[in-house]
Length: 118
Image (cartoon, rainbow, N blue to C red):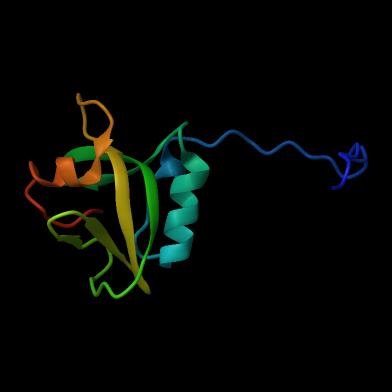
């Protein structure tokens, strides 16, 4: 086992706080970039996209395989919700619609129009 070590003070920088606009998901990016963006913005400020006229926050997602969808296109199965990206898809796991609590993405998808996220 390794012992923790103090990091050197040289080269230390402070990253600026993420803004709400920077937290917006662009499904035109690769699936890996989209997944990492969601992870990096969770829980605050919270990654988000537009579902029609409503802002949808996305808290958890993972890379998906064997899903063919255009960027932002939703693919909903009995148990999973996928969003297309530039080179594949991510599986949405936990989301929050306006005025609602955080919920499993599949529960949200059962009550939505299943359009295109942007």
